[in-house]
Image (cartoon, rainbow, N blue to C red; front, top):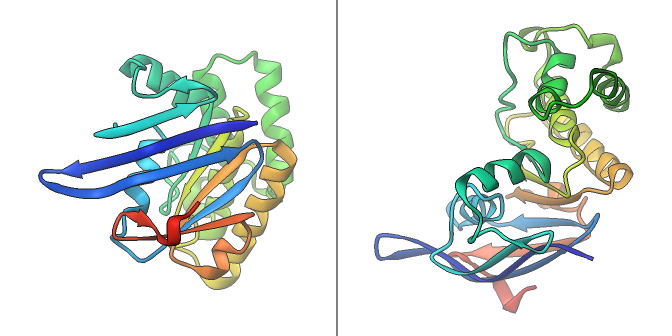
Length: 222
């Protein structure tokens, strides 16, 4: 089943096309890497897929629903319920503990209290940080913060997880641990993954690698 579909997607700023002619079909539970150098359009395409920006041409569908035709309020709802996002710089709330950061999206969705606690207890166990559940972000290492960010992104059981250079701010060992966790948890949770990276090693956890250059996929991919 296709959870994310892009057809002929393009985005320009002024007269310059940053991405153009991009096609993608992402299957449920599939992991796809967007691999390429800085400035090739990876993050722009990711923002379009996540409904943070709108294309100037082409079509985008999430779980069969058109992102172009969705109102701003509907796009915000889709981002809360069907999309999870992981950033390079974690973006944890500094005044919330590790557990509270994971709980936050579920509380915003008004999940019942018992379900929030059960879901987040399971996730913090899955990321190996049950012993750090009450720690503040300032007390966590970079790798630990990114693991919390992964759990937070998966909390609402999204169809698609979008990860923008999730290991770019980590040392090699911590980065590999986060990549292994992403592969393990997306497999377990059934969420598809779009991984933006310039690293061949990071891309290796994915089922497919789409190489980008100058806003297009190379060699007619996919």
